[in-house]
Image (cartoon, rainbow, N blue to C red; front, side):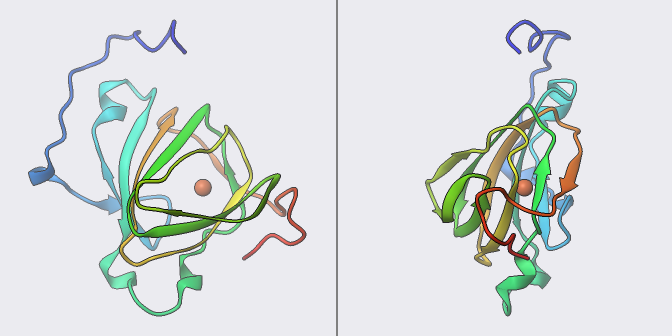
Length: 148
Ligand SMILES: [Fe+2]
């Protein structure tokens, strides 16, 4: 990555809070604020802020699950800005709960499932490459039953 991260030349980029726009993304119940990194790095990385859509707040947290899946990335991390979120991870025991200030590296292609999140969840996620596939998986190794 170090040899290729500078080519082609990265563009200077600033994403101002006052101009923030949230759009539809991978998950129906979430919305995503792209921070301009994918364009500035010619697709090598993406950074976005993710939150729950206003009309999806309240009620049953089960609707916030994503199903077992894996992202075909080289790198993925997130930092919780606000609220909380729970996951199951391949070969990691138990349910992991992350709250504001927590930071997670999800090793490339790890199988996982988001179980639930708070209505006020906000996370900053950074991954590479910007465009990649996400695959649904039948099970998460290390867990008897992949949660729905
Ligand atoms: Fe995921």
